[in-house]
Length: 258
Image (tube, rainbow, N blue to C red; front, side, top):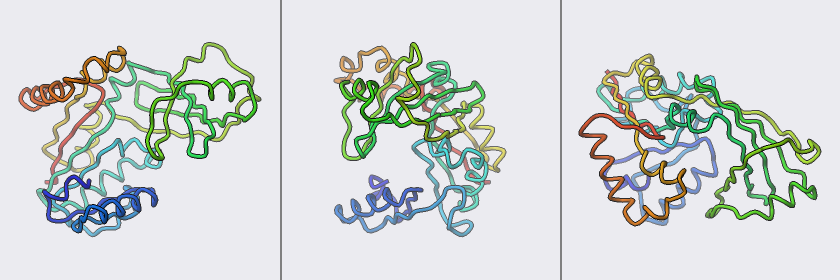
């Protein structure tokens, strides 16, 4: 959101994490940005009055967050409520049609901020429900030693990197400790459009994008297209906007309060 500071009069950024809003506020101060405010808030219960904002941005797969699993309709209604009549919203989220067909099951390890390791078994359904069962890897076990020896994707700062694996056979349950289950609601292009309309939005437009980058990544040739990645992204954006069509792992939607 900091990148918008030069193009808008003022704005408010929210996040469920107090740590994230504190980080954003600190970076704004460091850059001398004074027209943006960051506060901790729940997208399903926005602490703002009605008809307050000209534009609402819902970016970064917010609607699929676990805390909104049974409340995503309320979040959409709240976004519409705080918009002024005629105001517009933009939404960005995973394209579930693409993601489910690519990997109906996902098994991965995650490296936490405390240097511990988590193991996740992710089950996905065609109707958009994603169920993640989380486990802590028990220190000192062969599994902990094995995962510690692997080469992890590069991360930065507090970013928790993930390492995807294929669980070909079960390992002893004593090597992991169950810590909980989370569920997420995901959307196809048609599903997102229907959700926006049922929440009272009008002039809804949804398209999918990002196919070139994702195909190269899954094929393991991302490094080869990296030199021309910007031109590829620009070309794909032009096709999406001019032809009003697209396909890929991400959805972009616009809607208006009528």
